[in-house]
Image 1 (tube, rainbow, N blue to C red):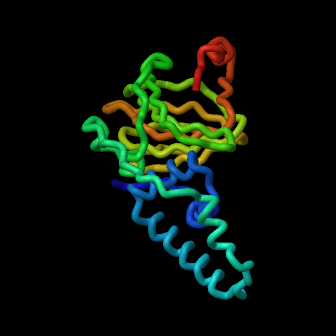
Image 2: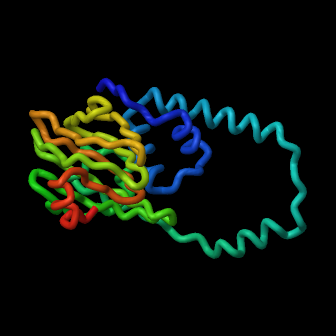
Image 3: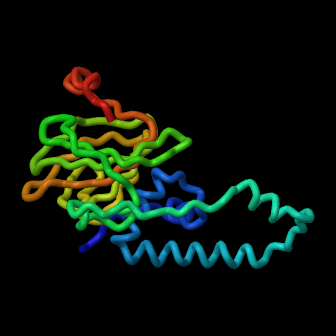
Length: 211
């Protein structure tokens, strides 16, 4: 697997520091499970963060602070891993902890599958599967769209994205992905904001989009 597109250094640093919301962190974690280069970069950011913490002066806490914090957490609950569906055996490991929804059609040649992720910032996570040769409508976003490809490939104005590639789009970008021939393209997407279809055809289709 040759991976060409990676998360930005700022994104990898945010992941290493634990400051990403769960929605975007899941898509980055999925890319990391496929990309040794980015796993190495995250380890480097973690080492830098650890060194910075070592240089900080210890701060005193009040007596009994630990006991009060533990009491607020309550009794620990046993967490059982979600049984791994045989149909998911070829998907990246980070998804094994989530109970995925069923595939449903959202347009010609395009299917959608929800991933139950909590996000206080309004982010949503889902899988998309598009048939070979599918041309998605030209669109832009009111927020961010982070995508990790599992299988197949698509192309748009900013390049070609195949297995393992990470596409980090924001409200400044406008594109119309086209799925390559051969096999369906399957992706994991974290979307914040909404999708705005462009052109007269896009305006006609906009009311039908439920992502």
